Image (cartoon, rainbow, N blue to C red; front, side, top):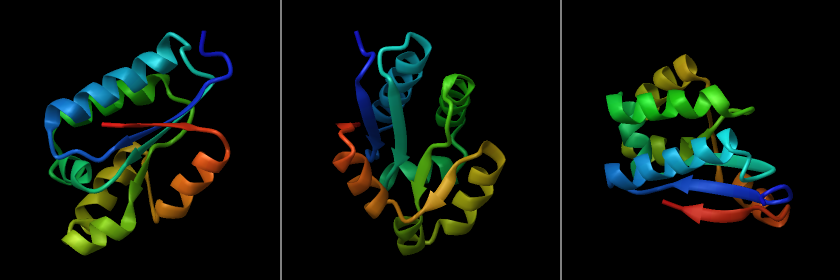
Amino acid sequence: MGSQLKVLVILSSSDIDKILTGLLWSTNAFKYKWVSDLKLVFFGPSEKFLSLKDKRVLDALKQFLSYANQKPLACKFLAEQDGTLNELQTVSSELGIDVVYVGSKISSYLSEGYVPLVF
């Protein structure tokens, strides 16, 4: 089904249930090979759950990472703006998340044909 489908999952919500839903879908997309590739981006409010080390989000992310073949991204600019960069970088280094300026990355993924799913 998803052999040629490339998906860009953007977790931007401040709603924990939406973030967990996005992580569950992303994990299953890798696990069941629904897609040929998937990129995961934490963007804005969702990053705070990482910075605060929310157990539910961290557990769901660890499950995702057990199937994923690349590192998720988190937005450095927005973390700088809301004062959570240090906390985000600490958690990210522990889990293997790249904290970068994601605006151009998102644009590149879209130009490469990734279908955006926003949670």
